[in-house]
Image (cartoon, rainbow, N blue to C red):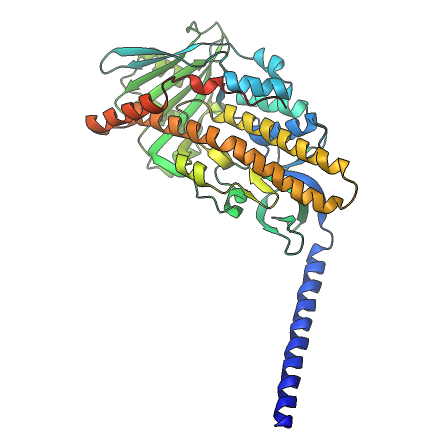
Length: 437
């Protein structure tokens, strides 16, 4: 009996020693992996409008950050972006509103024309100031106001995980390097690596809806009224917005998916696709597309995050969160995607600055305090943004349904009733104020 007990104790001791040895091997492996790891305070993933605006908002609060951009150079190309009164309030806080205003005209209404019936409708585009600006101008301004060295190019993130002991985010890069950060903010668009880490549901394609966008320059002036215009024929929508006295931004939104995969990358084929889609539209629209700047043309599949996914999504894990399209990508029908991203930047920087200030007042246990306060800051950010984004997403979704959906009349009537019930003031979304930075 005593021999059996002794053998059992010995076996357990061997198992414990084996477990200790394996644990030590794992720890040594982690130590080897972590050799040469670069440590950073705040990492922003993505150098688009939201990422750069977030970096600038933090900079205005005296907080340094690093923007990791996947491309090898500044992505200053792209189409126009509508900024409504709420977006201009955010830009005022970032300190670049005055400069950006000089690059674009203001307009107050959107005229919707149904070509098949001849019906027209005028709607206020914004409760206050609204302009369509060149994305490149906004990007360049944001960069100009950031400290040199804030942006790192060619940084392709393949995965992110939390340190098993400290819960610190660890970023693994495509080139094999590793970055350890105290805070990670994902501003990496609809195909977000950070969103995948947070286990967010992937954005949905809006049926077969895609959009062609471009600029057309009129050296002698375009002569269009200072208003946004949407012309609808069947299930095709052609939208225009004057940017300056000589530049017009236009888009063709349609429920046809190009069968030729080469169309998506070839500007000549994109223009031809837009011209074929716009058959039957007024001559001035056809001429606008035909005379467009080839380098400005793009074709994208419209995607969106469903309002209920915004309502229920988990937008924070540890000290990791998301903003902009990674958080709330939406269709173009309300023109609020860009302005909402600017709001995110202001709110997020304000929440972080407030909590980090409390850390600086606390001398003892600073590291523990940082983890706690960053979590509180990100929770406050998500709480403040969530319902604002739910309502924006819902109104954008319903507006798109009314403009392009071919549902039977009873369903369209039901959509109208829901819109009238939930959004009695159709332009009320632009009254929102994200507050002071």
